[in-house]
Amino acid sequence: MTEPVLRLEGLRKSFGGLTVTDNVTLDVVAGELHAVIGPNGAGKTTLINQVSGMLSSDGGRILFAGADVTRLPMHARAALGIARSFQITSILPGFSALENVAIAVQARSGTSFRFFGRAAAEQALNAPAMEALAETGLAARAHVLAAHLSHGERRALELAIALAMQPRLLLLDEPMAGTSHEETERLIVLLRRLKGRVPIMLVEHDMNAVFALADRISVLIYGRILASGPPDAVRADPQVVTAYLGEEME
Amino acid sequence: MSKPGAKPARRVSRADVIAAAIFLLLAAVPLGASMGTESYLLALVTRVMIFAIAALALDLLVGYGALVSFGHAAFVGLGAYAAGILASHGINEALIALPVALAVSMLFALATGIVCLRTRGVYFIMITLAFGQMAFFTASSLAPYGGDDGLTLRTRDMVAGLPLLAGDHSLYYVVFACLLGAYALCRALIASRFGRVFRGARENPTRMATIGFEVFRYQLVAYVIAGGLAGLSGFLLANATDFVSPAYMSWQRSGELIIMVLLGGMGTLYGAIVGAAAFLLAEEWLSGLTEHWKMIFGPLLIIVVLFARGGLVGVLMSRSRHD
Figure 1 (cartoon, rainbow over the protein chains, first blue to last red):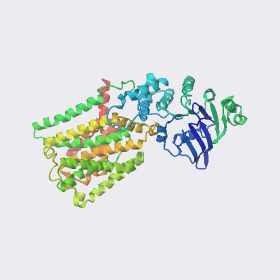
Figure 2 (cartoon, chains in turn green, brown):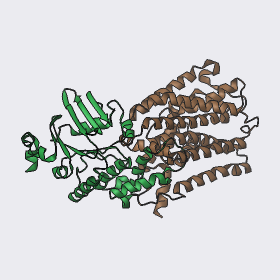
Figure 3 (cartoon, rainbow over the protein chains, first blue to last red):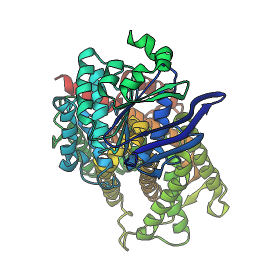
């Protein structure tokens, strides 16, 4: 078996007396979409925050492409190729959609301690940014201020930003949250196209999307992995059905 | 920042037009002044331009980085003291004094910025204020250099042996060139790659970190640049007034610089120039009416802040947008 892109070993996190991530071990291999599901408060977002570096871990290790990144700050992990989206959309509202993406391209192409020359006129930044916008269906909205985009468009913009980073791992925290039915369908099509190109760790509540996309599913309950495996096996797991899926799948 | 639907590559923006108008007006002041005996006007506008450089630097931090520095006058004072102290030791050459003034203020910005920029919001305001006051009290206790009373410069600095700062007219144009240079530098800076990251850090620092930028480093560099520009302003102030005093560094002075930026319209750069002019002209004229001129100025400021969100330039801009 090939070495996993991401490997979590016995990862822990507690807030005061509350253990939110309890000895989590899982991996994401190349070409795979690994979905993490579980009820509200199961610690899914905390897990993504730990992997991206927004939260420090109390114990365990995070291995990315074989290297230990457990103690690296967020910006350093991003520079290594870990991109993420947020459950609550996080963009630069005062920048145009194009600039939101172009600045992500900028982060990966040369120094940003350049004090002269208009960054907005750099074709080497704008062209890949336009590509990422086209990929996510936002090409026509490139010059609109991000603050003026609709909710669904902002979710797509977050994906475009992540793609522009040419990530080696994509962490998606509920990308479908709050989107309309059509937008969800469009996102599923987009993610299906992306998977295989970039390994993805997906946290999602929309079970249709999860079962349509995931190669493997891990079920997280009270910070602990209850079951992990291919979608069919997880769907059939009696423990999972009683603990979580039962109510969701009816 | 581009408005929705605006073409991003428009060459001449409204900002360029306003800035050009301001600088043409400033360039023409000595022509008008030379006809009368109004060296008073020349000195006043020289003072306006000197403070405009410091306000411009502050607008870079406040308007584009949301870094409200309440200790900005300290950098002005350090630049002024560098010139004053060197002059008291007989060093009257700007080619030495100016680099020293810039180096001192930039080093102070670097050392304090490393600490201040670890904090946000109100804490940043308070800690920059604290460092500013430290500089103020240090200057007050410099007994060999006048202490509380300050220090008089016997002659103005020479530039490469030429008396460029000596005459009122030539000093005016030197200050004018410095302001123009500072404006051009800041304008280029905010549009550059560096400026884009700095502006992004104001918009959403978390997002900037998740795409791989350590925003602290960019903010620190901007802080040092702003400190250097304020130091330049202090160097010019010492030469224009032939005097250096701890009052240049007082927290009231830092507050006045913030008022200039707010009054003119923050996040525009040229607004800082308009704000410096409006503040110092109001001070000049209102203090001629009564010594309690701040009783009149205070309410005026409140009206501007409440009813003209974009400051004075915001008022002008919205009017020209309607026609």
